[in-house]
Amino acid sequence: MATRPADVHTGGAALAASGAEGRLRDAFVLLWANKVALLGLVLTILFLLIGMAGIVILLHPGLHHLWEDQNLRAVLVTPGSEGHLLGTDNFGRDLLWRIVAATGLSALMAVGVTAFVIVVGLVMGSVAGFFGGRADTGITGLIDLTWGFPLLLVAVIFAGMVGKGLNAVVAAAAVILWAGFARIIRAQVKTLREREFVEAARMLGTPAWKILVRHMWPNVLGTVLVMASYYVAITIIVEAGFSFIGLGVQPPTPSLGGIIAEGRNFWSVSIWPSVIPGATIALIVLGLNSLGDGLRDIFDPRLRRF
Image 1 (cartoon, rainbow, N blue to C red):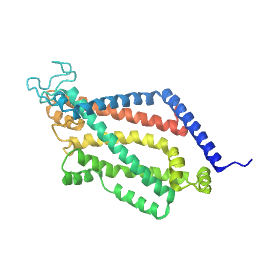
Image 2 (tube, rainbow, N blue to C red):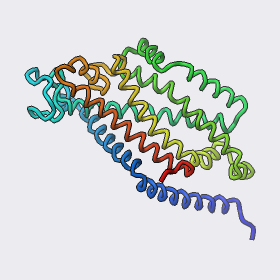
Image 3 (tube, rainbow, N blue to C red):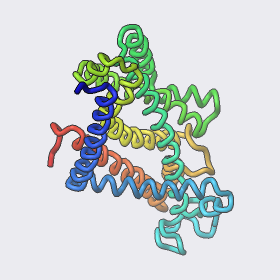
Image 4 (tube, rainbow, N blue to C red):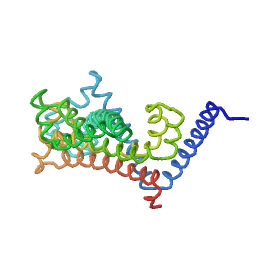
């Protein structure tokens, strides 16, 4: 009896689903075996939990006193003194709650920018790589043009347009960072479009968008996850750096870079207002990069080191 096209699609979907479940199960096993990646996962989960707590105390007016109340009788106290687990800053504000709030702000910005980068980069890179021709030429030209602008210059331009603050940093990071991801996706899609399963889908008359969604994007999922972890880390560093030089989040709203900048003037009295937020950034980036390296090893067996 002849096989109907619907049966082919149904069977293929079932095989794809079972294959995806198997790959996901294998990924968890490999992640568990990779101790560095497991450490990165733990640090990343801790970062997200602290970030969610920070978002709550930033957005809830009734909790603002935790990070903005000043006590000039307890200025620059050392960690563990006078009921302050991480000490206080030069205004007597509790460093623990300010770092929690700043981590929430960093997490919110990083997730938002990364989501924009992934969506725009995935769509633009897929269109350029799959269709080629004028679409590829135009998008590649836009990518090259975007990469020609330094991120700091773009941030200064946006700061002049909308004022210094989080909006300028978010806009600058989003406008520049998508191009690198789009370039990576374009290269992968150009390779995938020559594969047999894509040719088979074309011969069956499958629309281009369905080929991209059903056949191309699942095959670049590993790259998306790996690059997402890296872009979150990059965005956190960018936000901290711009806040440190005064272009980012403005006082009294706490940011990790801003707390470091405020504390650097009081090193002769206490190093902790700069060291603790600096160590926080280092641990967050270490966790995200370790997780990204582990995911890369899982999705690319050629790079597996365990």
